[in-house]
Structures are given as structure tokens and as C-alpha cells.
Length: 273
Image (cartoon, rainbow, N blue to C red; front, side, top):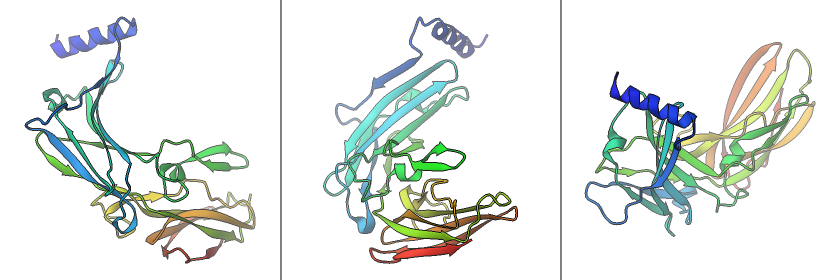
């Protein structure tokens, strides 16, 4: 029998009868500068490069095999300075570089924004919703969601990486949906917003930005009457997308409108079903 398979069987058996811990967590921080270390650095900022200080950043290593074991190593942590800069330095171990099709391995870069004001900045809770009721549909923002960005990445030893993060300032715009008749042929009328948010990305996007695209929480702004007004979040001083989703006569359609949101404009928006 293959030695690795035998090890997996033995470890699974031990986990099952609780003779050993199947979950392990350990610190693996560098106590001093080390040759061949890996460095990740960048800035956390809002519009026009305005720095965001005091934001916690960390790098963890995860390893696990289904029904066998899991391992977490805390590799590095930092906090952004007054210029929004951070730097993480860690050593990538040999076993973290080795690939095994039966074991999942990855590094997790986490940005913790708990010190940022959710009234001033668009945080993750604005983009996730909790369904309170299905009939009628009642949805609320997931305000208890941890204010973090988490990215699974691959790292090499003795490499330097740069990763910036953009957290936009927020402005809510009143959007009125008119002319909707509920409970008619499975009708649906919804508005949502899309905006630059998070880490950098080279992928083609609906908005011209070097950052990823965030969006308002799903099912948050759904019409249930002939005229309804919502407070929808947008990125301040940025190009945003207003998306209208309609189902009329059983046909689902989507319309996108690009708007630039400033402190005073647009004052409000109205769309017809």
C-alpha cells in the first residue's frame, strides 16, 4: 500500500476515535529577518489615494484533507501606518511549496476593516444580505458580517509581491421604482449598484478601474408596491453602475446605467417598470 494513503487512513481513524486532534493551529511568525523570505506590501486607501491607517492585515497558511485533518499557520501580521502602507514578511516552508492532489493548500491574505466607519465607507456588510422573511420577501443588510476581505493566493519563496486595496467612501442615493404591479405573472422589479472595491484585478470589468467590483446586497432593493423608494449605496466620486432587473410577462431582462456619483449629484433617481 502507498505510504501516503496508509498515513491518511491511520490519521482518519485516529481522528474518528478522538485520540488525536484533527485540527491544528500554530504561530509561524518570523522573529528576525531571514534569507529567502517572501514579502507582501502595499497600501490601503480610499478615493484619490487618501490613506487608511490602522487597518489590520494578516497572512495565514491553510492545509487540509477532507475527513482527515486541517492545519492553520499564522505567518505574518501588520497594521497600516499613517500613509496607509503595510508590509508582511514570512518564510514559505518546503512542505508549503509541495503539491499534493489529495491535500488542499493555500495562503490567505486578510484585510480587517473593523476600525472603519460603516457610515462613511462601503464595508462587506453592505454587500451581503440576510433574508428575514420569504413571503413577503423581507431582506436586511448583514450588519453582523465580519468587515474583512479575504483572498486565497499562491506564494513562492524569496519573492516580493505588491497588493493594494481600495475601500471607497459611501454615498447613499434615493432610487424610486415606479409602476410595478406585484403578484402578476411572477413579476419582479429590482435595483442594485456596482462600484470599484477591494483588491487589484486585471480582468475585464463593467467599470474602468484597476480594482475589483463590489455590489449592493442581493434582494435588498426589490419593489413590492406601485411606487417604492430605496437608499442604495454607491462609491463617492466614482463611476458606478445602476442595474435594473425586471421580469415582465415571464421574461427576465437586465438594464445597466453608468452614473458618476458626487456629494451632491445625483440627488435622486427614478425608474419605471
